[in-house]
Amino acid sequence: MHKIMHKIMTIRRAWVRLPSGKRLDLLNPTPFDWEDEDLALGLARTYRWGGHSAWSLPLSVAQHSLLVLALYRERRKSNANAPAALRELLHDADEGLLGFDCIAPVKPFLGEAYRTLAGRLEAAIAMRYRLAPWTVPEKKAHRQADRLAAASEAVLVAGWAQKEVRQTLGIPFAALSSDPLQQIYGGTAWEPWPPEVSASRFLAELTRLQRSCARALGRGLSQ
Image (tube, rainbow, N blue to C red; front, side, top):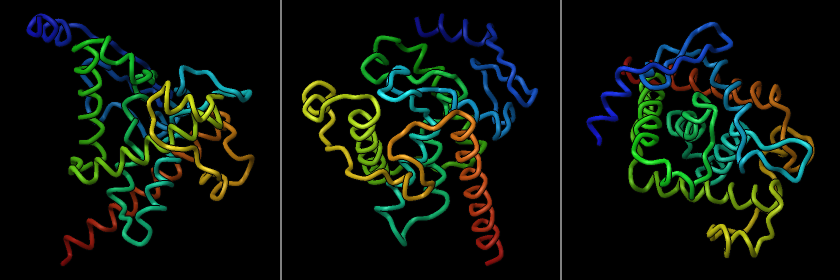
């Protein structure tokens, strides 16, 4: 079965035309197939929680990614570094290229082909942005931040009760009392941003972090 799926995915093409004019083959992506603006817009138009929301707008993966980054920075404080922060920001980047955020319990039912598809996109993203693999402690810390963000979103964006978050969704974290993104960007706490706002803020952070990574790399090479 695996050989058959591999043959299908290497023969077929799944092209998408991106706003920049570039085209991306979702089945055989390369690190050169999109611009940062394409990724930012894709994440801003890809929604969490099945696209459902207690607000007038759904929550984008771009806004979620910025929330996870903010939580990472809060915990790391002075120990935060640009390459690790960039990896946090891009932890769901494959969803922006695919245009689909699958809720976690459904993923096992999509099978090996979906895992292969997502893995290829993740590999292309890691190569383009020079993302180092997670270490075990780093992955654990990221997962905690991601799940804390999810618990908060479930209650304050999607409308779940805190009891349901633990008992039904199986997320063992309480929702945050304050919105870290409100402290950075202002506005109403936990309110989903319009796509153009999400894209702009994500792109600005992505650009800043890439510049910081380039400066850090330059310092390392000069030593």
